[in-house]
Length: 498
Image (cartoon, rainbow, N blue to C red; front, top):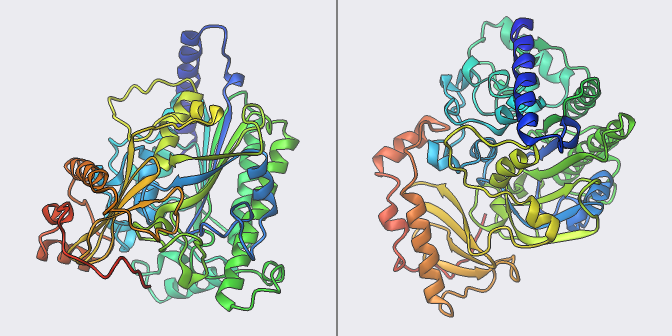
């Protein structure tokens, strides 16, 4: 984005903030509104942080924030894998409703596709309300200009547009240059491509997680020079594959003998170190007390790549708890009393309305959000959505896995030729005891809610790989008449193997 557009954006933001604060009266000023930081890990397991009782990985900086804030024990991502999860987070709606059920294509520039521009992101809402906005790290929501972060509510973007990246610059820069020299410009693996800052390629000088952490601290220091509050989306790609950690970070875990687990632990440790840098910068600039930090993962961990979701069943991509139930905390010294645990449902979809409320914004878009403003309930430690359900769905080869959670209970359809099951996941997070025969009416009600929710879905606008699209058409997906048949065929007692 060139300087003209930057200056124009800042002028528009200042005008919008002036109108907003005038409407609010003299009670509020820009300084009354909190800074907001979202720190998103990628494929982090439920049991891979100290504050969730990790048996072998230490995360001292995250643990301090969690202990001084409120820990969520029933927090859920918007989807069970990367792209749709991030789309739901930013748009405040289930990705199924705007055709983003799958990751974007792996082809060059994601095939020119991306999240539709009419899906306003909360970053745009905050930017229009006068917030200085920044994205550091992974995007994965479209690579063409119309989908670029600088055109979707971010004043500053430093990172990569696709779904992942290698970590050591001396390795990925060399491989990128070799492939480019061979004339492979359109087929170069996207995990090797250069990072960018506002559309211009940059040279990375550190291990990638450290690089992103450094850029985050620089953003906070830059924001400190303005009177505006800021929003920072620190979107780490760690500990997503490829498994690459520094020797120094892996040395923190001599007790871990499994090679993949040790590398994974080192990657998490680097992320935690970066969070410590962010906190120190907030304190140094005097912005610590009035900054809300929300930390979570975009989906569950992947055990074959070192992750641990215990005591949850399943893994990334599943509608089992291990697929989309994630570690999360809110930390805000000025407002949130520390040492709390929040046992009620929190969804990543809730961040959109919650942030707009904190920023004193009434959305001008006629857009029905799928989340709720959870801040009043969190501050009072009350259930933010009593009697309201949240949903998850993963399309597979000729069938769909589904989860519907309301209060303590969850209806689950998982596996080909599956039968609906019911679990009390508040007291039984491992989903070990099927209660469908004990509460058949409740199960039927939840399944009916899921079916009504499915009526709002759009056809997928893209598929991650061509074969997924071929299978979708060949097998006449989504076949919801079969999915939501409560009298579905028997399965093998709900056992799960991976």
